[in-house]
Image (tube, rainbow, N blue to C red; front, side, top):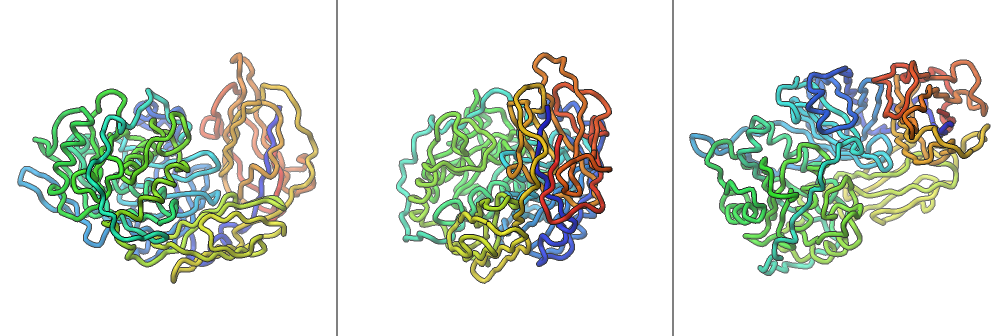
Length: 591
C-alpha cells in the first residue's frame, strides 16, 4: 500500500520568505552517529538525533541590535527555516544572585539571545541561544519538535552536541500531576487596581533554583540559561492569548549553590510551596508579580508542581513550585501550567488537550474556560504595569501553502502590543483588526501579509502560496500493511489506516532546489512479519506521472517492519532535490 502527499517545491523560497531581513543565518549541524550519550538519551526518547553544532560561530554572526532574524537550520538531512523576532525577556535591572560559601553574591549574567516567531510551517516557534546552548521548539501541524543541549541529560557530553526530537517520541512514564487541589485557594483579596481591559500588561517574574538543581546542572550559568530557555518557551503561550496581552519579564534569578538549603529539604510539595512563599517576599530583592522555584528534588507521589490560585500580586501567595523534569516540553508546559494557576486558571478535565489539564501533556492550547477566567481577572491585578517596551510586530500563520479556496488561520504574536492592523494581499477579508483572523484565498500565486502593531510593521512578501495540484493518477484504496507515519521537512503525518490515502491539499511542505533532505516512515507491522521496501517519488515536471527520469528520488537499502525508519538508519532514504524542477507550483509526491 502507498501513502500520497502533496509537495510544493520552490526554487527561491529561502530568498523570498523575508525580504526585510539580511541574508539568513545558516546553522549547520553534522549528525553524530552512535553518540556517547546514547544510553542516557535512550532513557528519555524512543527516537532522536544528535547533531554537532558550532554555537560559537553562530553567536558571532548575531547582531544584538537586529530585531528580526532568519535562521536556516541545516541539520544533517533536515532543513528548517525560521523567521524570528528578538524577545526582550529580561528586565533592564535583571540580576543573578547566588548563595555561595562567602554569602550571597551577584553573578555576571550570561549573554543570552531569545527569539520567538514562525517555524518552517508558519506555526509557533521559540529559540534561545547562548554559549553551548541552543534550546527551543517549533510546531508542525499537531507535532512539536524540540532541540536542546545533550549536556542537560548527560553532564559529560560534548558541549557542541544537541539532541533533536519530536514530543511524540518522548518516552511515557507514570502520569505526573499538578497538586493544586491539595492547596486552599488564596484567602488574601487581590488589589483590584484600575481597569486595564484591552491593554498590554507586564508580569514581572522571579525565578529561584534550589541546591539539588544546581548539583544536577553543575553551574550557575547552566541554570541561568536553562531557566531563561524554559521561560522564553512559556512566554509565547501567554502572548496575545487573552483579551489583555501578557508579556513575561524576568527581573531576577536566585541560585542556591551551597548547603544548607534556603528552603526546607522536605519533598512534600505543600510544605515546600509554603516555605518558598514565606521566603519569597524578602528572599528576592527585585519587585515581582509572581515567582517560580525550580527544584531538583523528586516530590512525593506523582505531584510535580504546585501553585496558589488567583494569587498574582498577593505578597505571600504569588508563588509556584516546579520539579525539574529534564525534557524541554515537559518543563515548558509545567511552568506555563503553574503560572496559569497564579493567574486564576483552574484545572481542566483529566485527559483534556489543554495546558491546564491536571496531568501535563504536550500542548500550547488554553481551554475556553481558562481564557474566560484570565480575561476576567487580568484587569483586576493592580501590580501588573502597562507594557513599557516598544512593539515588535510578529504573527503566526497556518498553513502557509493552500489549494485554491483554502483558508489560513492567522494569530497576532506582536511583543508589547495590544492592537493591530492586518493586510492580506488577495485574501478575503483583505484587512482586519482581529487578534486571530481567518482568511480565505481564491487566487493562485504567492501573496504578501502585513501586520502593524503600534509603530512596528512586519511584511512577509510572497508568504502565502495558493495553487492546485495536477490530477492524481491513482486512487485511494482499502487494505492494511502500508505506512502509518510519514515525515519530510515540515510534513509529519500519522495515520492508523495503513492503506493508500490521498493527502492532497492537506499535507504540504516547501523544499529548496538542489538541497539534501531525508524521509522518515513507519511500516504497519501487526504481526512483525510484514517487511517491505520503501520508495519515494516526486513529480518534478508536474506532468501527472512519476515515471520520468529522476522522479524516483529515494529507495530504502533494506526491508523494514515497524519504525520509525529514517535516513539515519537507512541512507537510501536520503535524497537531494532536483536542481531544475517546475517551480512555484504544487508538485505531487508518493511514497
